[in-house]
Length: 105
Image (cartoon, rainbow, N blue to C red; front, side, top):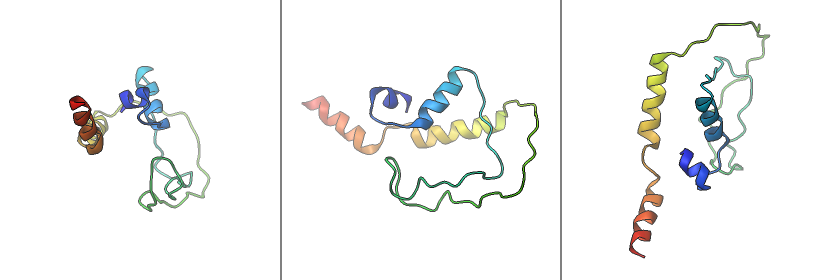
């Protein structure tokens, strides 16, 4: 995915975000309660279509912010690695076909 980003085949802030975190040995914390409304699946975005898959209610109560210790979870890392291997290991079908066609011309 990062190669596609660099070559201009895709344009995704998420790829750049995760690559930057990885290069700088950083972790990302994901809250257990939604503090934002995801409006990116209304069919107006570049890389998505209309979907309610990621809808979640906004958390409206006050959240206490405090310093916490952070460490990487080996179990969660394995889950994420396996997810990306399963879903993004191969280029999209259409692009694989186009690459094979290009070899012959």
